Length: 501
Ligand SMILES: Cc1cc2nc3c(=O)[nH]c(=O)nc-3n(C[C@H](O)[C@H](O)[C@H](O)COP(=O)(O)OP(=O)(O)OC[C@H]3O[C@@H](n4cnc5c(N)ncnc54)[C@H](O)[C@@H]3O)c2cc1C
Image (cartoon, rainbow, N blue to C red):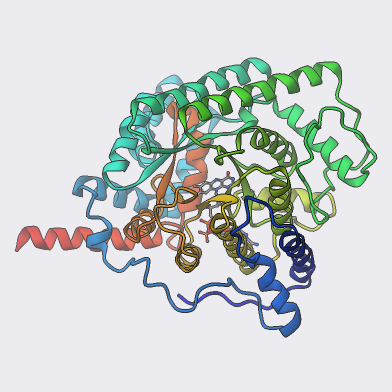
């Protein structure tokens, strides 16, 4: 597929200026880490467009990628047993039938049904044998480890995500901390490299009300730089000039002594997880959430990165490319990391809270913080991926390209090849959700890249909200699973014909 070409928006050009500035900063003051660094392609690319007015595109690709071959289902699914293939096709087909999914979602959300012991047990039984088995790695660390082994036999790795929802208070944060520590611990039972990352949600180790307060305070400090935050010890940039600040309409009260104590507890939880990951040589990936709390999540992430990312990227934050301020923040963070002499680890996603972000902004009378068109999101994702690949080539960064978008994957693969980043380079990882985009994962793996499946695990009722989101995403004939369904069917048909002849 050819790279997407879109006319530059006014906003994109504003971003460009910032990027150009960042580029000049970087090229005028080379750091030891970036000594071999190539020009900042994100900005260089856009600087070019300011002058010649040709549309901004992803830089590197010169021709369609021969790297990722999705045309040969036999090769793609060679490691998948027929029984598993049949189950996957079945689950994905059921998920594509809109009314079935609607009914399933209604049932799962129904208090009446879920409140009746017998009905609830029956429903959980059905979910366990269908969607749960398809999208989750197991109920506990033992089952998750077995799933990771199976993934590894197929040439893939696992990102272990103990699925928990937001924590309201310190006791639930402590319970979640224990589960995260156990998850890190469980990687010891597996050969090195089977698990690529342990995933943590800050919303599970810091009470959500405190995260909101911290985000408010950080936003207010962005509005008024004289506003002092005694607990903010590092200078990692959290927000940029185009970040949404509308969530915080008036100056927030400083943290109370109790809130400060809770903040220290939450920081200590992350410190303990980070230290355990460093000890076990397993990178930690921190998920991104909605903009109301994301500044606080970034605050935790980069405090921790400043501590652990001196020699290797241990802590990875997540950047959502659907946000209008994503490019700017990435450049600012990269520059700050360079100055601090630490490595920048980023998981790059498009973002999962589109509807709720737009709704919240509209309810407050503001524009959505999300790009106005999907093409702008695609461009932003591809530019940020390009930028991070250049950081890898220069030795100053690491990236997880978390996407199901084949075009983005192909563009990144070509860029990596052109920059001499080998598939075995441990600072570049591709990732897809477990149970989704399997053909793409195998295509990337066959092209020689390191590929992970992001694998939630935990008791069935605990992962129900996650399953509802997956059901929603795969719903409809033209859903995210279309390509997989087609290729899997083709392969099953081939195997059937071979068995008959
Ligand atoms: C390994 C992994 C980890 C993830 N971790 C996180 C995380 O921590 N936080 C998080 O928020 N999400 C996370 N996600 C989900 C991710 O953000 C996306 O929701 C999902 O992967 C779809 O994006 P895609 O890159 O696969 O692209 P595609 O398959 O191309 O999906 C594109 C989707 O982007 C949406 N979209 C974005 N911008 C626009 C726009 N301007 N207009 C219209 N539609 C738009 C649409 O819903 C569209 O369907 C993760 C995904 C993966 C694979």
